[in-house]
Length: 372
Ligand SMILES: *Cc1c(COP(=O)(O)O)cnc(C)c1O
Image (cartoon, rainbow, N blue to C red; front, top):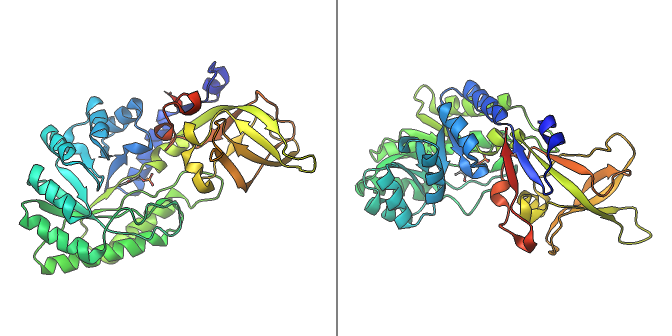
């Protein structure tokens, strides 16, 4: 990785992902949660090399659109290993996926269930329940899921409509740092299994979503602790009667496998009285670093001048939009010796960067990516 970065001749910022690290992360997750089937959430990084490696390791794939399904099929993934996990789908896209052989679908509303019953008859469906997402640095609350009582009713209806009510899903929020969230969620799901049993619907699957972390600035629990939290929650609430388990990691598989190399474009001050420097990079919110929105994800940054004295900085992207500030409230320090033209490295940027970069806002190209 360091050799690749040192020898790169690119004049624009780029991401490089070490696919061996993705493999390592996948194997670790499998080792720590051997009973869980992994559905990689490809929105985190759909690079063909990553999809191919994970396919060869036996992974399944969580997709959100016809296009993402096609990207998996293009890399030789068979449809029985694909979940159409978005709760918001066009009927014609469901029909297309069904025609391609996909038989596993998410929903969280009657409207979506009606589409599924019509164009994906007999498919396995799972209902997503609402979560609070407390403790998550990138929450996914409110927009997805429905209340447990509604989910239970919908799963009963699913069977009446000729679908196979397979299970229940949740997502505790991305980059979740509060391990107790899984216990709460699994408890709720286990209770719904019992309720539905009384309605003669035997659910067989729990989908525990994503939420496993990458390493940004703040300390995070070890992956072992996450796995233990999940396993303990499952045993506590399901006993020996464990249903099929699905997890949908995105960030934790690819985040730490990637590094962005970018360049310092401008270093300035706003006032003679101010210590704080503004450091403008050739990458910003619109060219890959969208997760700095509200300064939510705080990346680790390495400069070639590290080691000397540092001073406070605000960090911003190159575009003509004042929303394109990466960190202003969060305390970031950079070396006083930093110079225009220096190549800096933004660590753990393998997830949610290339897919979030715009096609050409202000004429800046989308984030280039390499796999090694
Ligand atoms: C985004 C997403 C994931 C991946 O979440 P991470 O926190 O990146 O692991 C998993 N499942 C669903 C349904 C998602 O939308």
